[in-house]
Length: 128
Image (cartoon, rainbow, N blue to C red; front, top):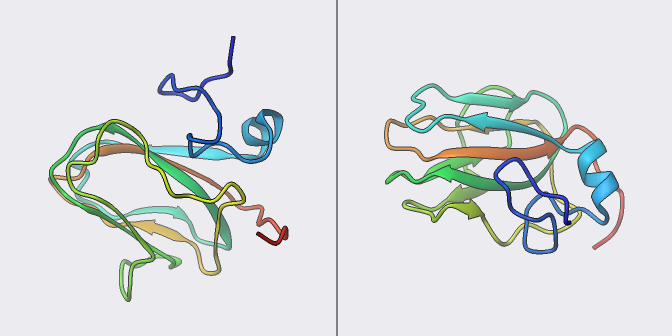
């Protein structure tokens, strides 16, 4: 039986929890769930971090902006969870993750979807 993430999706190349093997993903990857409609900004990490992906748990009409920052949602977002994104893991995250030099902050919004953010404070030094 395949190992599954908290939503029940198998951990494989199409799932954002996928790193290089299941043991690494489960031992080195954290996840924080953000409830749908959370209006406050959510600080995922206030230090160097690695983003492995996002999984939509509850559909929302709003687009969610993610910032490489220690505490504020200012400047240019480095990625966006699209509005009305379907349930499940969002594609497009590299297996080695995305390095964030300052931290990770998710912009709040009344129409944001519920989602899990997969990250670690360990940054891979593997070249893509």
